[in-house]
Length: 124
Image (cartoon, one colour):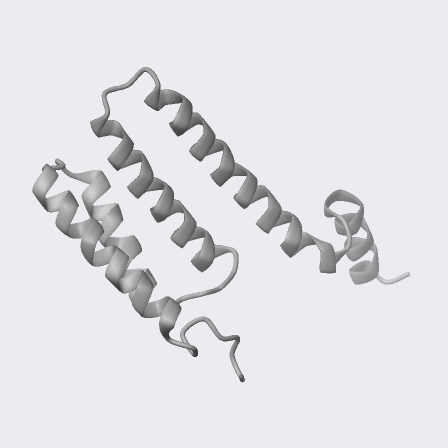
């Protein structure tokens, strides 16, 4: 048995067959996102209401990051939304600025969803 074959078998024992690994990463990342959203929802019961806006925006940022990192979707408008959300999350938040950011992000997401080719697989 060649060294390459041995390494591949060892990796499959550790991580499962290659064709199953990407989906398990997707499943793990989606589960982490669900955990974040659930804990955020629970936190809203005891936290000031203003935190809800930030938590929802961060949930959207995480979902867009998941699209990029795990699914390989790098639609420029979605990348720009994620970047704007990251900037907003890392700096001071004023209500008016956050409202404008979220309004623009909603419009941009609608634009992506109504563009038949925006999320199409390559080669379609």
